[in-house]
Structures are given as C-alpha cells and as structure tokens.
Image (cartoon, rainbow, N blue to C red; front, side):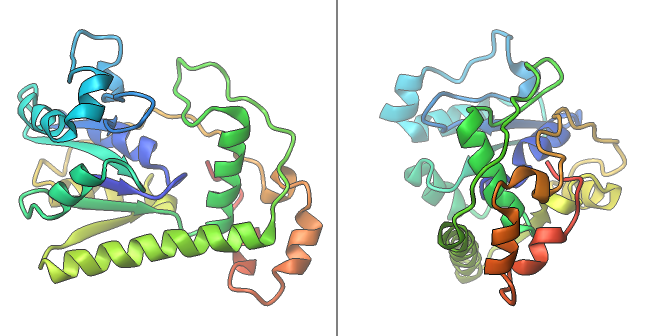
Length: 241
C-alpha cells in the first residue's frame, strides 16, 4: 500500500512501480470521485466493481484488488490521507502488506501545488492528458500554510507510531528522491521483486516554475516566514512537480 500525503509525487511513484513486469500498482482505488485503476489498465475491460461497491463495501473491493493480480507477484494501490478509514485500518494492521510512505520534504511546495490543483481542477497529468492548466498564481495564507504542514507532520508521526507499535516497518520515500535509480532499487527490494528492472514513470511535471513565479504574494511570504523553519523551503529547488 502506498500511503501518501497530498502532492507528494505518489501518482508518479505508482506509474513507476506499475511499469515493473512483476508489479501491478493501482492509483486511488478509494477516491470518492471514482475507482482509479493502474494507469496501464485505464481504457481496458479490467474492473474492480462499481463506485457503489466502493462506498457500500470497501473491504470487498479491497479483496478483489488483491485477488485480481493479472499474474503479477506484487499488487498494490495508493491511499491518500483520510480515504476509506476501514480499508486504512485493515491494511495498516496486516503485517503481510508492505507499506510505502510517500511525502515531500518541501512543505511550501506541497501546499502551493495543492492550492494550484484545487484552482485548476487538475490533479494529475499524463502524456495523453490535456496540457496542464496554467494558473496565474496563488495567494498563500501563512497560517493556512503552517496548519497544512502541521497536519501532514501529525499524520506521518501517527502513522509511524502505529506501525512501530504493531512491530511493522515501512519504506519512507521522499518526492525529491523518486526519480533516483537508488530509490527504485530500494523500492523493488522492499517489494521483493527483481530490483534490476528499469522503471519508467508516466506523468508530466505540472508546476516546474520557481515558487516566486507561482505565489502572488511571494515577497510578503518571504518576510512572514523569516526565521521560521519553513523559510528554507522557499528557495529549495526549482524543478518540482
């Protein structure tokens, strides 16, 4: 199970894993807007049931996902914060399920990317998708930014505590490292599949501009975060998604 905080590159990670011949990795099977299958299966006749089943009996959908493996050795899916609490608890408590926790070091980037996605309505972009919608810029409220970072941190701390209490281990993957070959090999070894297979992601960058071009009140934000732990994130990296 891929456990993700928002805008952490989890769609990118899912397409990378799904490109391995021994892995079937779906996206958000329990998104309230629909059952998001592996990108490679979209448009095919593969099915895990209806949105009604997702709402009525999510644990049955989960069981179907495990069973319909298409002959792959490792089957997984992505679960975002707050989705399908029954599934979250069932899988988190199951030591047979390997957990990959995906997050983003740059907390300001994560927040700005989420605000842009909300404004544009576009949360993912693939080679055959419409060109990413351009948003002129977003206003960043400092308190909302801090609360967003705190919520993500609290979620991750709680997740790690629950896993530690249960005697389970998880593999932590950072957005900034997803494209590295070393990360790919660590992931595949963790999933106990051939680590020598190359992985090919299938998403497009949506917000590659520096934060100064994405945030309308960037100068004011810099002043407001002076001396704050979030200040370093304002200038860290310019090739982000």
